Length: 116
Image 1 (cartoon, one colour):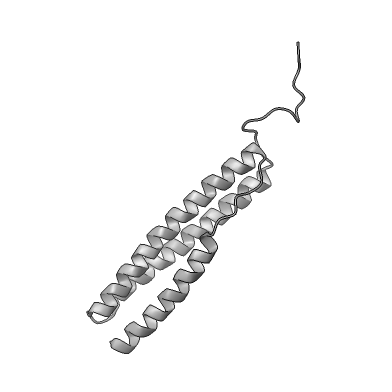
Image 2: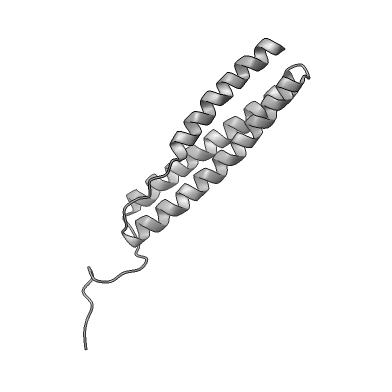
């Protein structure tokens, strides 16, 4: 009767709690970013004069907040599965997308402030 050594077993295992907590902290950082973007969108919509540029900026901020929340959750799940299965952590292009989005939002905010 063959017995499997612990190193030969595959499947989900309970990881070191430090990795799980670090993954959760990263997810919470994504959520803070999403909440900040949504709050900025609401502030732009309610506090600035109504114009097409400010409404567009508010919608872009709200959409970016929603996307940041969804991207953070997707990354959290991928990393959690990798941690529990003992595989290398996934590498995503999410950081590049968020940085590109942040630059585009800054440009949009600058254009909106000139047009208002």
